[in-house]
Length: 548
Image (cartoon, rainbow, N blue to C red):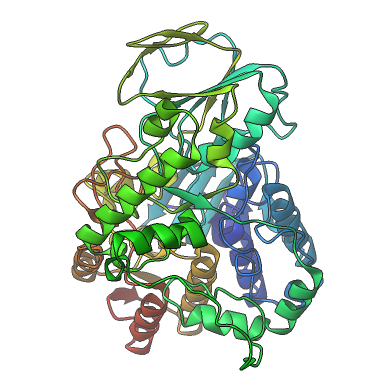
């Protein structure tokens, strides 16, 4: 039975990042009685929590921005091509204010329980502040990169100095001037933060287990004329995003009439295997290291990938002055495109500074954390500040830590113990009226994630409207459809470097000790996925079970 002291709602939304904010907006437009619950003191999700130095978007911001409201698109002026965290957070606060979303959010509150009541066909949601809600629908907007991951070092909490995680950086910032700083982890957050920390720290020691393939971001101040033209072209940009399998337009401004007298602009080749060794070197010289990320064949051809990897390491040896640093920072024994693409601003240049060093944990593993620093098999390191840039328990971490119980009290974490099982990344069988946005089994993190967020929010919103209009009490994934979709997701990953046997990444969950190895996102593409979602609806919500 539902709790008689509970606040009765139509829907509870967990999380107020980009997905949660848009979900509030859509359900408000339907006139639903809702409550959003947010652990932080402000909106923004990942852009609220990740305040570390250098944090910024890894896509052009005109494409990594909301498309649902043209006034919002026209009134916001971006200052950089790839905006930084402070500006994105301001943008999301502006969005919350523009659509009066804060009235439906309870901040500084964590969900502790989500319990399905079969008799009443609703959810009881409890919080750490003592709140109890009953709602017809429970919608998880908890994000894919939310739950911080820490390394399993012996005596990890022994260090007596200041300790930070990039995903929980203090709002007031951290003074690192003239401090001896250690950064553990050289993934995306490490790649972004290390060059900035290197500007302040007297000594910066980076501890790295798995070097990353990273390419220059080429960020720059936003050209006002370019932004003005983009605003005029937003309808075109969004349509191109919808027709691209990554949700990306690659907008470069309006196409200009070709001048027949203008010299042909050189363009990189499409395939690395079409080039001679000399031509490959020449294209790197001409277009930069990032040309290796533009050839198509390394994404699926092992021979092409091996060539690209060799050229990457060779070029790295030319960029870095110190052979030890070049060797330590060289990715080895796994393919390019295995991990999430990383772009950087002066990352390798930072290691050419005398105050920056790299410890290769493949050669000298960590023995333990000490009260003064870190001890490896080679040396005792001492420092004042320890920064964990060790990423996230991605895609499932937060959801698995919530006490989510469906039919017959089944714990979702138990159902997912061998890997997440969802139908289209939207629902899991046995958990009626529980939705996730950009959940496992959807394109999410292998796409322009905000483009995928909007598609998911709109699908969930339309589904709820359909249920209400037709007096349908519950919807849940059919187990057979769920099993088929899980298999389809696995098949879509086959042949990709992301799922290669030699690849270990948070896509596969292998960055978290004890997490089952399974490829979680859907590689079929956002355009294909959207069409599949639309087909499901057209065929009467095929693969879902409904009850009145």
